Length: 393
Image 1 (cartoon, rainbow, N blue to C red):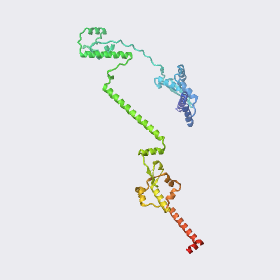
Image 2 (tube, rainbow, N blue to C red):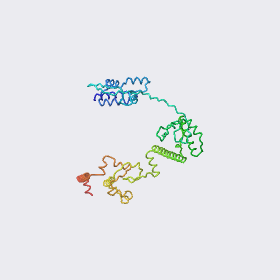
Image 3 (cartoon, helix red, strand yellow):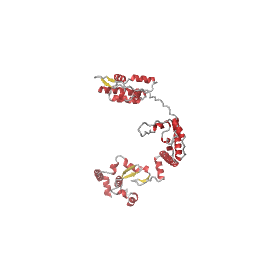
Image 4 (cartoon, rainbow, N blue to C red):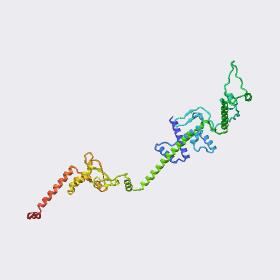
């Protein structure tokens, strides 16, 4: 079976390549070639094409297609037409299929059946029967025309003999026309029904579709349908208008700068100004450019107070500017916004080493200050000019 699968796969690959070339799908064919090269697939051999084309009678099918002015441009479509034209895929020609392989040939027997032609069958059109109107009282219960006498079930005699032979239509008409009938409401209804059936039959034979009683739609139903359609149109129109307005406003907003858009939103009370967490001044939202924790701001303020003795914040100023809820332990690490000016104190590389020192850094800083003070005192002690001035004083 391996040889048979190889033959079929190679033949299918050649048919697909022919289809892609005929349809001018060059990109698809290029991708197909790349996939085959990536999978290291062997190129299809001519032997598989010859074997399967002879078994499928492909030259004859192509000649028939060429005689028909190339109804199908590709080989794949010709094979599909032949498959659809046949009764069943297993009943196709030939009677025996022989597959040649490098190991041993394979021969499969297929029952010999005839392949029907692709031309549709032509059936003779029956001539319509003459239109006759039955004037019997029970004619409304039977089909119109000459089928009435065959549709009614014949009654057998009580003796079990053959049923009576039906009389001709002319004799029945003469017999019933001589009988007296009184016009009643039932007869008028039956006559109207017969007239409608006769008119519908004539229109159907002439190719005109007549209007039946079921096609009538009451006026109140038509009004409800019309009102529902108007409601749907109104809803669609309102949605389209809102969508167009949104797109127009969006384009108008995109034409503004970020600051102009923020100012417009502040004028319409859509946004409010926010305070900087360090300098406590109010700024627009676009000017709040950095977010840090409240602990970082507290550390920065403490560092400034330690290094600069002239900086002092009174309790009244703290109540005026600082938010007491932000100084609590559970809210000390919440995010706080900073303005453009105050953000520069936290954005350089060694900012955290400046305002948030470790214990080791603090001890080293104290030791450095003590050493500087000792060196200065010793230098003043060994300076004779300063000593003489100090003695004079």
